[in-house]
Amino acid sequence: MSVTQITPSGLILLLQLAEQMKILVRDRGGDNRLAHHILGTVFFEASTRTACSFQAAMQRLGGTTIHVDGEGNSSANKKGESLSDTIQCLECYVDLTVLRHPVTGSVGQVVQVAAKPVINAGDGTGEHPTQALLDLYTICNELGYDLGMNESKTGGLELNSKNDKEQKTLIVVMLGDLKHGRTVHSLSKLFARSGIKVILRYCAPPSLSMPQCVQDYVASYNVEQQCFTDMDAAMVDADVLYVTRVQKERFAKVEDYEAVKGTYVVNLEVMKKAPTGMIVLHPLPRVDEIDTRVDSDPRAAYFRQMENGMFVRMALLALVMGKVDGGAIM
Ligand code: NCD
Image 1 (cartoon, rainbow, N blue to C red):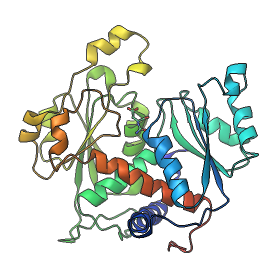
Image 2: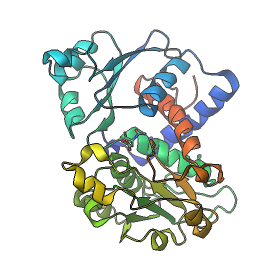
Image 3: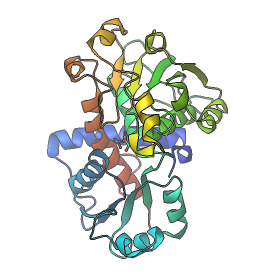
């Protein structure tokens, strides 16, 4: 439901397993550990990456999928069926469900009545926990941190560089619509929870700043947070620039959206000034916040980030279905 449910050791297990899944896909395409298992993907909001990567993950592990387009004409939602009835019905046919819904907290409510595992694929402006997991996996991978990382004495994760083994403090800039962007809510909280040494810099127009409840959660783990409106200032010495879309569909008035859209655009000029070792991430879809000419810059990691989503979701499905033997591939 939420990244706040994961422990540092659970996170290590998941990231390591995701790495094994990447190798499995590369070497053999997948395996059959989830044969005769069915995943239900129920989406009441648009999705390309999350739905397809969960479906591909399930199929690469030998399972199959049933997709319900919650907004479509074939959905009983059109006849007035409640969300919890839809999920309880689908559970008669599937082994686990991945659910996306526009109402914040709705997925958490469904879990109260669900008999089988439900994975939150995004609940309104709340959370998008599996995106945060793949974001963290990508950051470790791209910046060359050892995924065989250990839990420190204080119970947090230590990021060890493959080269110099020193403990480093990451600087992560989150840019754009931090108010409505559920991916940055989850990622901030996951960083706090992980114990990784990090400074979180929030760069947004004042009307789209990071919600106080997220900042309070992060502060409770003593993680340093800094607020910016100037993109160049925020990027000084940054390791990660995490760009988000201004979420048009979440605004009550279109004028409010028009007033802030296009505030930040990452283009070639911005990249020229950016640190040479800084990676650019984006959960996608993008609208105009990253110029397509940036795509060929080696620091643009958003398409690799998207591919990693499948490996992380393979790991998650295997763990949730209990098809992992002590963290090793079965
Ligand atoms: C994001 C989402 O749905 O929250 N997309 C995704 O899952 N990769 C981001 C967005 O819609 O802007």
